[in-house]
Length: 192
Image (cartoon, rainbow, N blue to C red; front, side):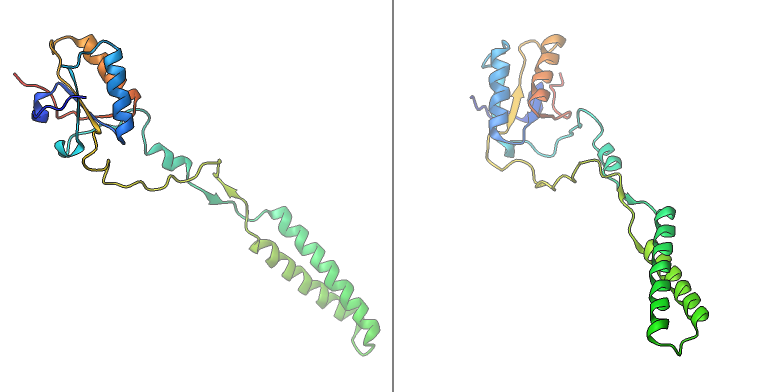
């Protein structure tokens, strides 16, 4: 863990991590991969300004498509079933009411009760909410603090290569940083 007072532009590669433990893991993996202590630096997060970061991995906006939900419309079979059942129930109740109240005209009362039951059953079937489509077991991720890593922590790993033209070494370092959830700052790099 070395600290050096250099400007971020003097490094060949710089990555910002979500927390200090991830940055330490990445720095130790870089050292285990053969990078010298003179090449790997762990810096405080306040040293890096607003860099240019690129999201690596799958497109983050794709998840919004999979998190969309919608309710299906009413099931026509269910509407018809509710209408018929409530028609039979209210028709039966008005038939029973014609025995209790003999002054009611029998066929008209039963027909009116059945019609009201048919209408109420259809309304009840139409108001039933359909099932939710598109809920595939995912939840919307909770909003994390947009401010980034806590200030003052050593959450930045910077590399300054002895030979900046060594592409394979630079690629290996990028892979290690990305695999440990580091965000590479694309604005950093020595310009000779």
